[in-house]
Image 1: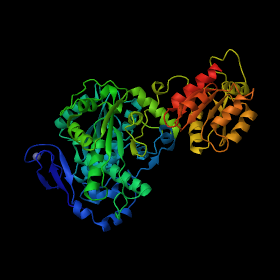
Image 2: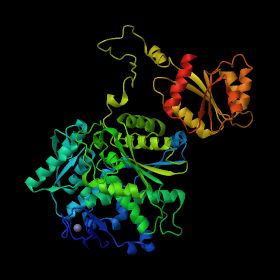
Image 3: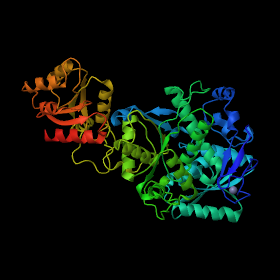
Image 4: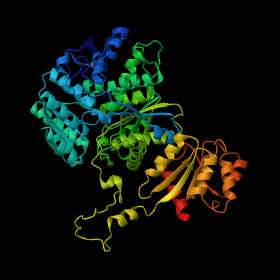
Length: 563
Ligand SMILES: [Zn+2]
């Protein structure tokens, strides 16, 4: 393994790493950074050897603070896919949006990286009993890895953590302690307990092993982007490329702080040239880091009673995390943003319906932040954006879905329910009723991606169903409209053969077609003359890449309802 030094973040005191230190011998500070022999690690031969290793986080073993491979506690964590968000990109009018799919870790969150390395380091240092405070995900992940390592775990969770999550923690044999109060209070109780019992306390972001694990996210995404877009540095032994933006929501702040160090190390080793911009998002009801950052404070202002329903984001006292996060965001010309819980929930719906990705509410907040920064034009057309996408969806509550998310139909011969419907109806009648609101929509667009996006948006609309017809040029489109007489037409203006203006002119001359409402969805900026030509039958003009799915379905439904 590489020779590793520990460096005090306050006074710079540096000594070879032999065992974790509680405090700096020179200044008593408790924050250490691991430093590696970067010049040696630049060696091309080494990277070529690394490339042959399996694609999981231990591929970057030489940049992780563990002395002996025998102590690795692993379940193949890391190496998660970088998923291209094609439908979202189409909808948002941006070209390169990706999710780093951390749902695919052994317990479904990016915390598996932390648990794997932190528990390995504990094992190496002879720890056999450990105390952790958690809003859920860390406790689940640590429980799994401690079980493998034979380490007894005490998990202190605030009482707002969902019962299902607590039961999952207990399943692994962890001692579950439910603390009535906030997460910050649970942390204090855990620390007191550990001290009284003389047990090892996991220090969260203040543990360098925990932070070091998060670097592997940066290493992986740069490798994955290098494979897609080619190396940033010519003749690099391993093609790597940093994104323009890295997005993550913050609670304790461990993720972005660790990931940032990973980018810095890659630059130090000459594998990338530019560092990405960091976007850190917090929930409005508990945003001490963002609020303090925006106020230009050097020390954070705590939130004593977090007011967010997103429990995993309810860290009100950022403590030591604030300074390094602030430094990283300032250094990267990054952004700190806030979203409401509702915006986060709404983003979960969008991501599930548009790209098939169901995520935890904390990640919903991250995506809601992305939507905001795209709307504000902070994210440019060609920016490559990676969003940390963690899993472990909360057990889906009514809170998230609202009412009317399911409709029921009794199968033939099914026993009658306690309260039978006043009017008994057969299966076929019931199924027919499900289709009662069906309307037909013709989509005329020569861009197959645009058609796919519009179809996806309409298909995902709950409680209303559409029969969708499509045509890829004006002539076919007109034939289709004459044949099917749809309830509405979504029309692109720039099409080969007969363009959108021609289609409209032909519709106006046909008595059967002249009253069908038309929505123009166009990439083209219209001149005033063109806008006048569209007046009348065209009810709405939408600019491609500049509307949300909800806007579109609302508009369509409103126009159909009037009709
Ligand atoms: Zn020091």
